[in-house]
Structure formats: C-alpha cells, structure tokens
Length: 588
Image 1 (cartoon, helix red, strand yellow):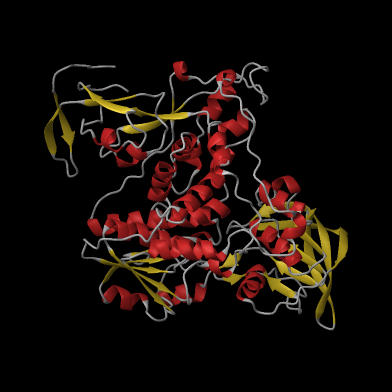
Image 2 (cartoon, one colour):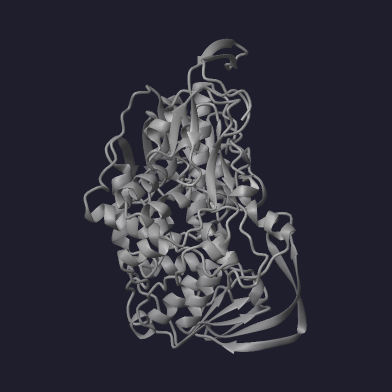
C-alpha cells in the first residue's frame, strides 16, 4: 500500500465544472477479501467510484483436482475476466445473494435482490440465466449454481414472510415524467424514476399491466398470479397508471410534452406478430406466434390440429410448440433454418421442449403452404445451404430447392419475430430506422425528439424480459440526467484480476453434488398449464449455495477514496469493511 499513514491526509478533489476542493481524509476502508461476498452494494453506492470488483483465478492445471476440463494458464486468465455479475443486464451481483443463502440469511438475500429487481419472481422463472452461463463452477468443475431458481425462492420466501409488499414512492422532485407502456421495460423505468422522486404516470393501451407477460407468456413458465402480484407491488403507492391510453393517439406526444410532462419514455413494445411472405401464409390454421399465444391466453377459441408445426428456433418457438401439445396436438415440431447447435433458443429451453415430445427439424426453411379448401394441409420445406445477414440484422437463408421435404400439418405457427407499430411512430414524428424501429442514441435511448426516450422491445424489435428491463433502467437514468442537467458516465463493470495469492484451488473446495431441480412429470405437464418447475427444498438451496467458489470480491482504489465510510456502514455482510488510518493512492 502506497502512502499509508496514521495521520489525516489532505488532498484535492475535482468537482463537476472544474471546481477543486481541499479535503481532509481522516480514515480509509480495509476490505477482508475472505469475508467479502461481492454483493455490489459498496460498488453501486460509492460516491467516487473507488470500489471495483476483482475476480480470482481458478486453477485448472491438474487433472485430479476436479472433474472439469484441464486448462492452459492462458485459458485460465481468459476465463478470469468473466463474472456472473458482468453477465447480468439488470445489474445484479449474484454472488451476494447466493452467499447470503449459504449462511441461511434469507432476509439479507431478499434485500439484495429487491434493491435491484422490481420483478424478482418473474425473472426467477423466465430469465434466460446469462449469469449461470458465466458461472465458473459450471465451466470448470461440475454445474453452475442455480441462480435463477434461488432468486425465485427468495422472492417466494419474502412474500410468504410479509417482506414483499407494495413499494411506496416519495414524490420529492416537482417534475412529471410519462411512461408509455406498462410492460417489463416501462415498469422498470417507472419504478426507477419514482424511486428517484419524480412524479411518474404510466399510460397503458391495454386494460392491465404486464405487456407480453400478460399477452403471450404461457402459464406453465410464468403463472399469471405471480406477474400480477409483482406488478401490483412494484406500482405500489406513488405511480399513477392510466389504462386504455395509446400514447401517440390519445394522448399525443405533443399533448404530453406541452401538458406538463418534462420527459417521456416510450416502452410500447413490438406488438405485431410476423409471418414469412411465402405462398399460403394466409390460409386458415396459420398463425403468427403472438396471435396464437394471445388467443390461448385470453381464452379465445383456437382450433389446434393433431399435427402442429412451428416455424422458428427461438425461445418463443419452444413456448408455442409446448403450448400446442397442451392444447391437444399429438405431434409438435419446430422448423429451424439454423443447425441444432446454433439455435437461438437456449439449451435448457430446447431440452425442456424435447422432454415434452417436441421434435426439431434443423437446417430447413418453409417455401410454401399447401391447403385443402383454403385450410393448411401440408408444408413444403427446402434445405438451407447457407445463412446471410441483411442490413437490418435479419437472417436470410440461401435455399437448395432441389433438396427438400413435405410435412403434413393441421396448424402452422410462425415464431419468426415481432414488429413495432411503425405507422404510429411516424405519426409521432420520430425518426425511424430499419424495420420501423425508432432511431435512438445507443447509450441513452434518446430519440430524435428532445425529451423523448425509447426502451425495451420498441428499440430491439424483440428481446428477453431481463434485457427489456435493463433497457428501461438505462432510459430512466438518461431521463434523470436530462432533467437534472448532469452528465452520467457509464461505469465500467469489467472486473479486474485478483492477485495470484487469491487463486482458488478446487481441491480445497467443499465437496458437494449439484442440486437437481425437480419438474412435474411429462404426463402431468401435457394435460395442464401448471408450472413445470417444482420448488426445491429451501434447505437444499442453502446447501447448494455453498458450492459457490467466491470468485469475486471488492477492492478499494485509495486514490479515489475520500474516506467517507459509507461502504463500511452499508455493507450487508457485516464487518467485511473496517475503517482505519488514511491511505493515499494504491489499491486495497
């Protein structure tokens, strides 16, 4: 440590606008790296950005140390740069609540989860689990920690024990902000802005909140009572909602901006399902995924035949195929232009679909739908020779028309993406790009109209729920910066490499078999829309949480630290941070 001293130290701090102030640092934090659980609380709250995540290297040189693959030193360095926290679009530091569970502190875990996530039970069921993809335990030893399942059970525990209630927002900033859309992106933006103190009103075109969760996500993945409960709690006391109001029509953007709203966040989603422009796509029995799923969710009659064919290889396609089986189809298959190893659906989604009987025909594309009396009867396919990307980021297959097959089909569903309401955006006067998506500043979501920001599927076309929520969070921060006149610099979340003395040797880790997450039987799953995943015993989750290798911890940059002691006061893990004599410069 450079400059360690037992007396107060004077130093200069440069404030915004170039002002310089002399401060006296009277103490500095010391971090016990062995006790730090890398929860991110001090990192997110440090006023000077002095706290940063470090990742320990995991040794994988010896074949007898663990069952995972042996690695060269260069490979170990590469994987050290990855972390579960960096993978989370929303800003979670999963190590924190995982290690809270490991010590049986469910209330502490809930505090960490709920401070970041307004919909923990939702993401505990349908998040794409990017954190688990980066879990080094899974990559190097045996299996990733079941982080998503842990989040789900933390949310359920909090609800059962009365900790998860309605949020209350204090409107202490006399500025009004409008949010268009009450889906995951709009809700996240509204919650963040209301938490800052802004007066927030959501304008939702439908009769209830939820967005695509309400319209299209099947109950066997996300029961309706879960998202309804969490949206209600997140809206809480202090966020106003106007239903049946389509921003751009009534009210218009001009009416909002001239009527007292200082900023508008557009999070209206991609509300139209797509079909491929092939002959026969307008026959009876042919649907877009959005039309198909929304009809079933709303209880409208849908005639699903014995043989259902889903065109697409993504997450929505797996949902549609599994839904068709539950609605009476005896066969359901997915037609994918990609080879199986390149499917956009996540591996566990494909595994769940296969377990329920969905078959996958990969490397083929539909070219024509044939009918009997204007109702779908067969689907003609051609082999995909290659796949190219177009200017809008879409995939265009090159077909080998001499190599194909014909499938019998009673129902065909196109799960090939969704489209925004480009005409409505045009009437708003927004500049748009390919696909009618509004042109935005990628760092803030700012549109071509001052004070108007866009978020969620409206910007991406279609993405995951956690990505939509992260987009809403980015828009809320941009709105705050716009209204406060502040400049918000995006914090670099990439972790540094810990000193070699912190290296983790798997042979020293506690021996434990990965937890197997239970599911209801396939027979039961296909006869109902009951949630497929069965909650594990909470004691089992606590035990499994002890498999966490504690890859990450926090260090202090004493050149940036002002010795305020905030980190020590707010640390949820106890005496991890202690204040001692002042230090100038150097690391922790």
